[in-house]
Length: 151
Image 1 (tube, rainbow, N blue to C red):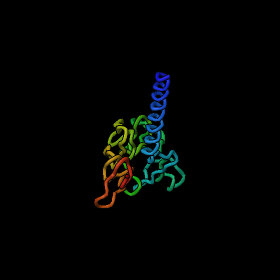
Image 2: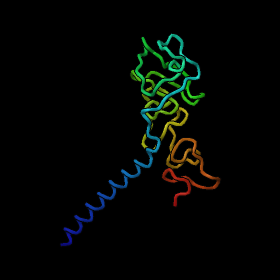
Image 3: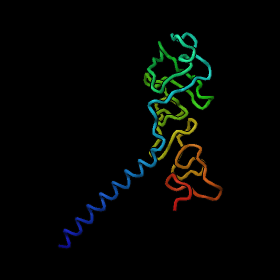
Image 4: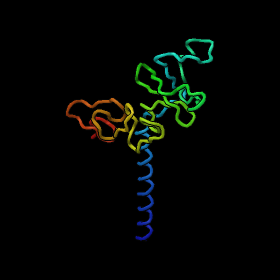
């Protein structure tokens, strides 16, 4: 009887740990990348085959590119300087905010980090980037688990 209760307690503990880990991962992924995100270029592209000047100044996230032949996003500044687009594995990526291409193509941020202005930054306990980039906690308030003043 005691053995079966011990096994049941171990199983429940394991299930609880898994659920807690999943909940933490969901909480920390509040910066989920939006596939419909668009980048408004600070300077419109030249030689872009478009009938509209507006279309030549907007690139959707994930637009296909080729670093050798059709590189429409090679160091292009976007969204008033808050984005910097590069061709990473045949797709345009913002290296200032993409956690899989942070700062340079292929640089992945670790679990609990987000790409803040091109640097992998701890968003779990950083009072200047609490839960997401540039979310500051009030003076004297600690950042715990990505939340200011978590008790």
